[in-house]
Length: 325
Ligand code: DGY
Image 1 (tube, helix red, strand yellow):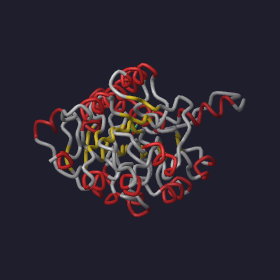
Image 2 (cartoon, protein in one colour):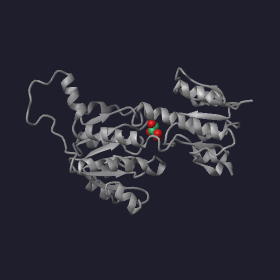
Image 3 (cartoon, rainbow, N blue to C red):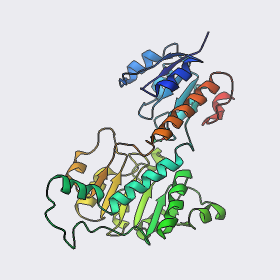
Image 4 (spheres, protein in one colour):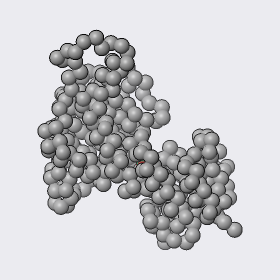
């Protein structure tokens, strides 16, 4: 008998078809968002879970689903899964690293450019029919070329963002849990390691790409924003919760920093409505990895992990090898 799996949210039909070759699949083409109780009920008798980064796979859910053997997240980030609880229960957890590095780095740059050069703010002005004449000081922004880029979280995506800065003749400073090797620093446009606070004082444009954990909750709050240069910009393509959104709103209102570009929010898809009243913020709905080829690659990567996990192999992107020892 084929193992049974749940695909929690709508995903590419051909990926569901691929999964169906190996498993009895319960999918969700209508993209209904299940409550935790509904998820638990649907997971009874299921061996595997193809999860979406918006699904919360809590310790309570894990305990309530004793047959579950693998949780395969369609995202590189996995803060939505209680990995410690899964490990204790002998459940494999996987993510989708690498396939989204370049696309996510591209989007970090899209937000950086839009934020520094006031792209959406000026488009809103044009669309509102307010553009009557060219003015010497209309929508003056910050230069990107020749400026200093600060990357917080210098993993593979952070390094891809830093590499792109070569074309803009930028200096790169970075902060990371651990320092890169000299070879990797050289490839990342000769990136220079700084403490978080020194980076915030130095960079003209700061991009956050660090993984979320409780240890970095509100890593950028009022005190850190106060360290940034007055004309600086902040981009968050990492996770909501890394920035204290209320503190950021206050800093943007006071013009303490010039502008922010945000793809992720505390409590998304809900977000602090005060952002909507600010012109100096570019807002996007968690789409940094959303190019058609990359989302497909992520879905196939998650499927490949699930197929391996439930056929006695070690999934390529296993996060908790201790679960299977
Ligand atoms: C990830 O992969 O973690 C992204 O944030 C999801 O798009």
